[in-house]
Length: 104
Image 1 (cartoon, helix red, strand yellow):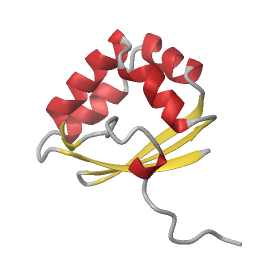
Image 2 (cartoon, helix red, strand yellow):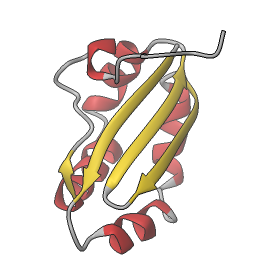
Image 3 (cartoon, rainbow, N blue to C red):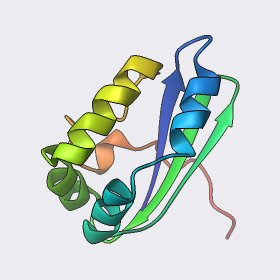
Image 4 (tube, rainbow, N blue to C red):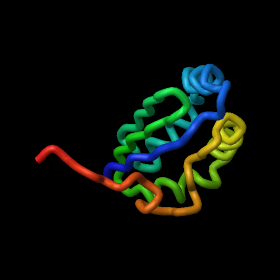
């Protein structure tokens, strides 16, 4: 399953956001993989962030990560840096960006 997301960094906080992602805790990356993600890439254009996640089951991945202490701490850190955060409340693929076109 492939999910694309859009989040947004607060104005003036992009350097902090980039720095935080150079130091993602190994415990968190291990948990993300254990929850079924095989790939997660983030691109930034100004303050806009675009995520592409490949995972076995996105709703299950969110459910497994949502209450995990290392993820709760990370999400709190990100909430301080972001205007638009990764939405755990949707709990499924409806939280992702809609596919408009794919190369046939």
